[in-house]
Image (cartoon, rainbow, N blue to C red; front, side, top):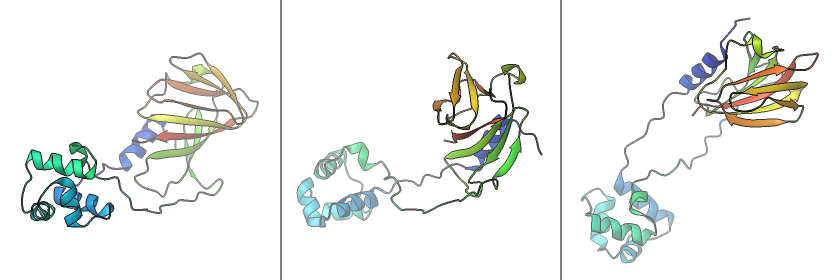
Length: 207
């Protein structure tokens, strides 16, 4: 089984997500979308904003660039702030992505202290990296310094008893059903206190 540095595993997963491509905002389309989302006709929106219907029509069709005064009237009529006119809406469409990982069928990756089973491996551009980990380490000295990386992390104990060491807190003992959420940039290591290797669910943010 390939031995992988846990930090590099998370780095590779983060890089695999790629960079989100942000399309330039079309002000006319944005205004039209805001108007239609309120169920207003062009005439109704123009009246509410105190603009001529022809002026609003030209803005929506990209035939004129509104002055700041016109933008303030538009924002006021739509009951939003001027900056919100230029803020792209969050994606409303439902992508419907899903990945099922049956028990024991995750992608296995071993480190010197943990054995990871990566979950939802078929999904690209994830915002979270979920994985099941078997804790081999029995003492802090088995680690080559702290593990730390960007993002936040959630840990849930599935079986056994563990001790979580963190850079800025006293070690904490966690048992089955216990969980902890922490800043992953803070050094952290986990050891098993059980006779058998403990198992945990880890979820790491990739954004």
